[in-house]
Structure formats: C-alpha cells, structure tokens
Image 1 (cartoon, rainbow, N blue to C red):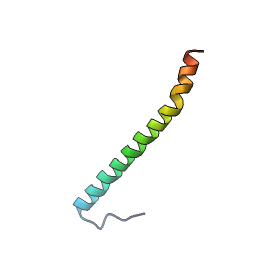
Image 2: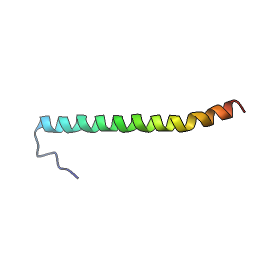
Image 3: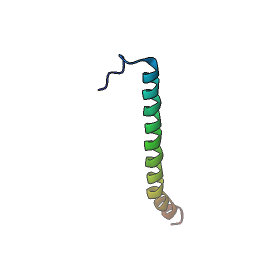
Length: 48
C-alpha cells in the first residue's frame, strides 16, 4: 500500500481526486457493458 501520510496536503488531495476519477471511469465502463449485455435479455423477457 502507498503511504501518502508523509506527502503534502496538495499531493494527498491530488491522489484522492485521481482515485475518485479512476473509480468513476471504471463504473461508467462497467455499467455500460452491463447495460449492453442485460438490455437484450430484458427486452426478450418483456416481449415474451
């Protein structure tokens, strides 16, 4: 694990913003893929 306690507040804030941005990108891509997979299944169930 990376020890950010020894770094300045600006470095810690930048790391936090970067981590949140990375998480947002991963969730955006993940939910997009899930929607592509799930929507045809949902449509088939609706129209069955």
